[in-house]
Length: 182
Ligand code: B4P
Image (cartoon, rainbow, N blue to C red; front, side, top):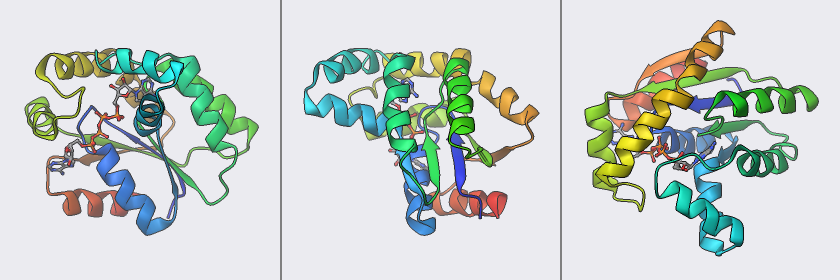
C-alpha cells in the first residue's frame, strides 16, 4: 500500500471522512489543513481569528499560513502521511513539491473523489458546520473550480492521479480507494 498520499476533491466530497478511515487502518498520519485551521480558530489566537473570518466566507486562507502549518508537521513524520485538503491551489502545490524534494519523500498517489454538486450541497447543508450555509457553500464550490481543480490536470500529467466515484456509501467509496492504491 502506498504511504505518501493526497486526497483531492470538492468541498463535501468526503476527503475528511475517507482520510480518517484510511489513516486508522493503515497507520498513516492524517494532515488535514481544514482541521488544523479549525484548531487554530478554537485556540482563539490572532492567526485563528484571521483564519475564521476567511473560512466563514468560503475563501482560501493565505498560502503562507497554511504552508507554515503543513511544513512544521510534515518534516517530523516518519511512518507515512495523507494530505487532506492541501494543496488547494497551484502555488501551494509548487511549494509542496519543493518541500517534498527537500525531505526526499515524493508523493506516491493522488486520489480525486468526485461527487456531483447537488449531492455536495445537500451533504454540507445536513452537516451544518459554521461554513456550511448555502451562500458560503456556493462560494467554496466556485473557489474549488477556479483555484483547486487545475491540480487535477497537474497530477494527471504526472501519472499519479486516481479518480474515485464518491457518490456512494462511505464503505463502498473506501473499498474503491483501497483498490486504487493497492
Ligand atoms: P475542509 O476542512 O478541507 O473541508 P471540506 O473540503 O469542506 O470537506 P471534506 O471534503 O473533507 O468533506 P467531509 O469528509 O467532511 O475545508 C474547510 C475550509 O478550510 C476551506 O473552505 C478553507 O477556507 C480552509 N482551508 C482548508 N485547507 C486549506 C488550504 N490548503 N488552503 C487554504 N484554505 C484552506 O464530508 C462532508 C459531509 O459529507 C460530512 O457530513 C460527511 O459525513 C458526509 N459524507 C462524507 N462521505 C459521504 C458519503 N459517501 N455519503 C454520504 N455522506 C457523506
